[in-house]
Image 1 (cartoon, helix red, strand yellow):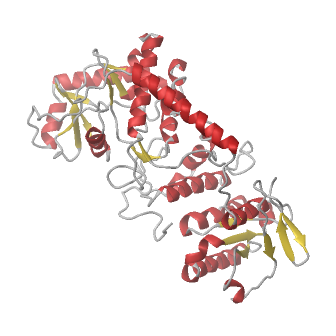
Image 2 (cartoon, rainbow, N blue to C red):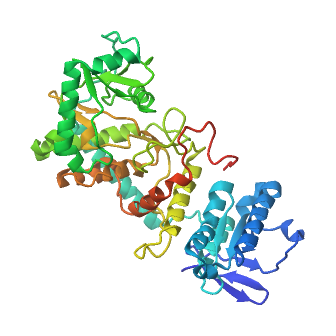
Image 3 (cartoon, rainbow, N blue to C red):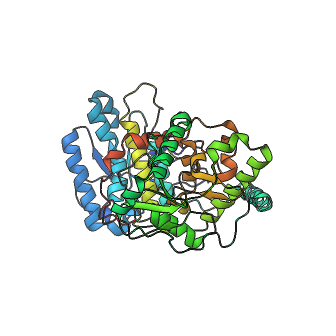
Length: 473
């Protein structure tokens, strides 16, 4: 049953929640600092946006009040923005500005907030739910949910067992470091090697292949092939910000086949081992169903291994910055965020702000939300598991390359990274849920709105401290 407020004389009582909980809201109001704030279970701090300028001043004052005097009990406070029914009478940009204030309060100030209208009831159910969840958190677990959890767990274990049987080989010492075989003293010498005939010929082959296949396959931003084969066993490219650290981290902590990063003294050149084999994009259609199944089993096994690596701070291994194709923020940086909770608030903030800024007629009726069932815990993810970043050798070893956008992210981002490639074989798409253990349903719309307003929080240079500044949650 949807929660609602029903007036009972000087008080308001909520309707039944799904767990049967009720609450009674004392309707006493005050415009001054009073004893009402000395002892309370939950308090609503109201600010009217009937006049946008006065309203914003009052909103700022309430944010400061909570931060200065009630920070320790802010979980039992909610700033309620009223008169939202007047937004339709304002210019679009003003209405969008007012509408996003609750999310700005939540993200930038770590204070709960909601906008409501007493006339049309918008926001009232959300406000009641927040009060109920704060005072009477629903910790009960139904028999049905337990049954589904057990079934899901048993299914996962069965699929993992199948993968362990049919996965391609993973040599135990595949990531053992070996000495460098070529002396590359500096970046200038690496540039010299790029201009050698063999390196130029290899680069041109990649460009031609990209023109015929990759660009048509929907690889976003693919307009060049900045990779050179500078020796029979070495390739190089311009050093991505985090790829060397991310790839080295995976090699140290797993036996997933990853080419060895070399020459760490180079400042802007990234050199790795050349893997003799076929890019999966080039050979996938020629593989039989059983071989494709084995590749999918191998990737599921890789993903499971990566997910054993966890951390409290989201983002790249070095610095925790979020720079990921999933959100299309390249080459800008987001974060770093202190923990998964703030990262989630940031995702929800951008999705909501993007929706409010959408003036098209076909947008969804209400701000998009991420699926309630999605897991926001942080596990290491590759972030770009495409046919372009997998190499299959003659001895059936599946290598994973391009770790630039990997890092510690929620599990659903792995599947989102695969789904950004639109024009790929259906025989590849069908394995995505099996490989990642989930569904992409419900993520596309909020991610789309996130991308539309990403410039609001990004930085062209890595930040030195957590973002947003001064927020502890």
